[in-house]
Image (cartoon, rainbow, N blue to C red):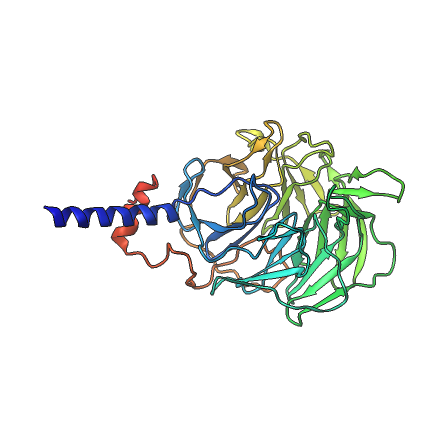
Length: 410
């Protein structure tokens, strides 16, 4: 009986070890990054209770309930620095994440470290690197949002450079910088006409016609003026073909000015915004609103069912679009004054909040031929192996482990 007992103990300990990996409990966070690759919602960086720098994901190929989530840690995917208030942009082939800006800290000394402004993550090999980019000199920026066009150029507008790292304050910008992922060069664009006011904390989405839509955020109209929130009906437009700025006065319902909110661009040309806060970090109304970019001028509206079962007021979260779902992760609950740990799901077809996620049965094949918001996931490529310890487990063992996580396989 002794030998069978030892075998049982070995199997049990092995299951517990693997269970601790598959049932990873990530620290709550805000002002983090998220992208979707291969049916995986990857989360990294952000402000946590203790400085942490892990990479983990939520499997979107399986159904789940938002109150019973199974996160998986990618053991060798930890970013090389601690960052928050940065921007992460996915390459056109869905293989590389480009991470730029934010507050960067050395993981060993916890000192601010801007020796590298850009880091890249290669998804197939699960490795981070610090690629070198030539061209114009670009200073560190915080509270920016990058978008990528169909030629592999990332556009980064405005932001601020916290030259005073004690109080986290510094000058705001209104320049447009580009990061060419093909030629590996930075460029500060020379733009004719009147550029917009210096701004940060906005939302950015790039339309199929090449126009980047900038919404909300904080601006400073003059050097001696106070920082104020941008009127949500004052839409900034940047044409990536002509390098010209323009402004549009949107119509429709009134939407409270805000910053630290999220946005996603739907396939039918609607920009859905969620959350955010006032300058004094109080809640805003409505929590969710839709900007129809098919109309001229653009028009704001509030879906009828969007207030039913709505999440609390959250800021500093992320939103990603995966087929019919806008997926809200983490952030700060403004009213409760605490971190948000749930994942919230908004169905863009039925325009209501749901608690259960169902992956599409027949995923449409979408070719990436136009400039679209990279938060929209196209048909995932063939699965690539990563260095996650969850990969390569036998079927029976996986089933046993998932049962201990509270997920019962059918």
